[in-house]
Length: 496
Image 1 (cartoon, rainbow, N blue to C red):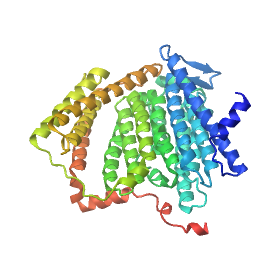
Image 2: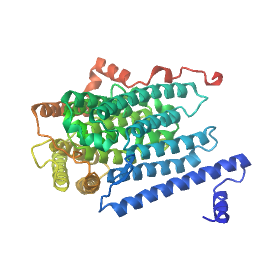
Image 3: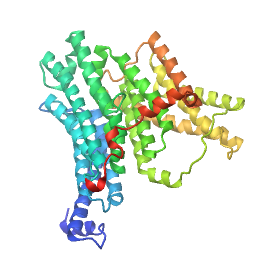
Image 4: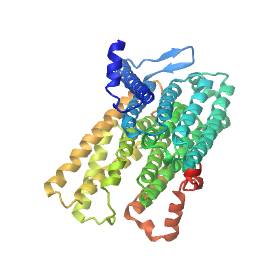
């Protein structure tokens, strides 16, 4: 691009009352923003043109690009571009704004490298680098003692996750006599069951640490020291790493038969985190608990054999959570203390909720093909039915709406919502075509059915607020949702 055109363009973005040093930084910030948006548009274009062919590119066995790589690249560069653009005005005057830009850029590039890495060394190093840059964003304010402690605590968790991932992947590399991820996956069916199980457990530990699944959740609850754009990047991108990692190693989960472990871990995390979310009074802590719950659902989907559904979940959750974090200031500004509503449902309302839930589940099954057979897809359909029912109840209880509005809005909303979800689901499934075990519905077992019943009971206990009447449970949930002690008002910032 012509320098005579670039300089005036960048200068127009800089306030007039800044020093030359500050102007140089704004120039740099504008260049990074332009680069990220061009990177996003490039990825989106590449994805669009290669969608029908579903190409696979391999470079010397080190880098491997397929449809799955492209959709993750497109997603992460979009979030990064949005958040860096947002931070331009949000972080004006922040002492470590320059450092924030560098760390968020580094994180973005290493996520892209991790998804494309096909060599064991590059794969593990990229995972380590992602944790390093995210810990840097958590502790970006070097003058704040709590931020330093939160960064240290997060980094310890990330290092443990990297060691666990390295142990699992290197064990498989040694046993398959290959250093390429795709060749390792191709050779899994020849390995002894004990090796597969041990390696899978190591990989699962790495995944649940990064996604803040219990009992590794406190690093995320302690990470609220990060600026809001960093928190949005963390919750929209970094914690979703478990879904990416487990999707890459879906064949390992299949051959090791560790689905049940994922189902239990994810299910209990989803319910407990939803409980703890209701007890929070700080908006960022609420969002933190919400993210942990959503990651639990994502792990559950992997435990049901639907790694493609987990990838869809992480993408849609990224959009939703990034928006919630960036708009959290408005939530604080316009909110006021008020008594929480009790769930009181009239018979006619119960019928409307039930009918819409069933219709939503039927539409989901029709569009995605899940839930039409007697397999684990029934769980996905059940979750959709619960979600539609909950949205319907939130609408029909509104006194300001007329009867016709209450009758029209629920089916209208779930028709659009499920239609969009089905579009994403089918598109992601197509892009993951060269990952043959990414969509493996499991036969229903007695254990799965029992666990599903327990999950439903826990859900209704949460919605009905029964836990508030059990003091020891209430206190346990409060304590469970507290951040690491050294990250909470332990320092005199002026002396740091």
